Amino acid sequence: MLEVSDIRSVDAPEPTPDDWAFTVEAYGYLPWVDATTTVSGFETTTYLPPGDLLNILQSVFMARASAEKGRWGVLADVAYTQLGAEQSRTTRRGLFTGSAQVTSINGLYDLAIRYRFGARESAIGKAGHYWIIPYMGLRVVEAQLGVNAEIIGNGPLGLSFESQGSLNHTWSQLLIGTQASLFLTPTLRAFVRADIGGFGMAGSRDLSGNAQVGFGYALGNSTDLNVSWRYTGIAYDNGASRSTGYTSDQDGVEVGLKFYF
Image (cartoon, rainbow, N blue to C red; front, top):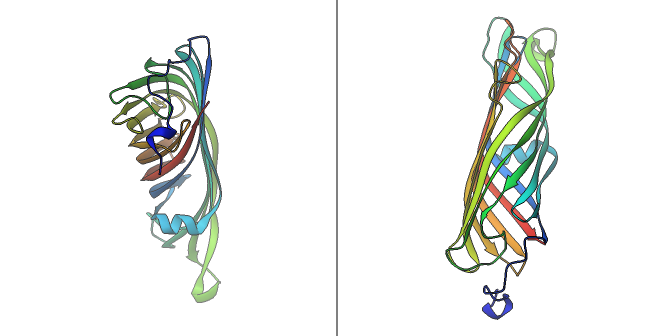
């Protein structure tokens, strides 16, 4: 257990504005996923609870970092996942049986300029101390999805899987967001984060966003354990007559370990 005597005094002076301050957070996000993939007008829907998501997870990397001097700074957030074959349902009938598989690589890569109101970010602080950090920058969205659909053919039971095509697209979005924290006790704080990107700049439909609320608990003078509920949404469509696009709604628990330097 963390003892009060182990924590530096919350009356300690804040570093001068000329000092650099840094944060690094490694995190894991385990959501429920409800997604639709459309390739040249052929559409499939996928629903994955967290247990199924773990079964097909092939690789993942998620981390955030920030650097600040005075009240101005920069932040970066990288979230990359690669999934194996997901069982999906088609929304078009005819020769198709209604069964499909989708393989996917998804990435959200954020880089933004930020400005801080309130106290400097820290693992511990006086109850009532807060910070609010709006930011603006660039989000890069990566979507690599392959769709195979089950059709009438010469395979087992007269069925076989055939490729219906792929979506391989990486695009950039304008990003606007804010994050805020409030200390409830010297070691416990509540925090929120929300952002939105896109605004239709890369297609007829082009939007992404996050909403997050949770608590951080100090494990020491410079380390936090963060637990939160997070929603992430993506919607993209190229606007063609036989459209190609992707939508995804994800919500679930995020757990992170954050370090302050």
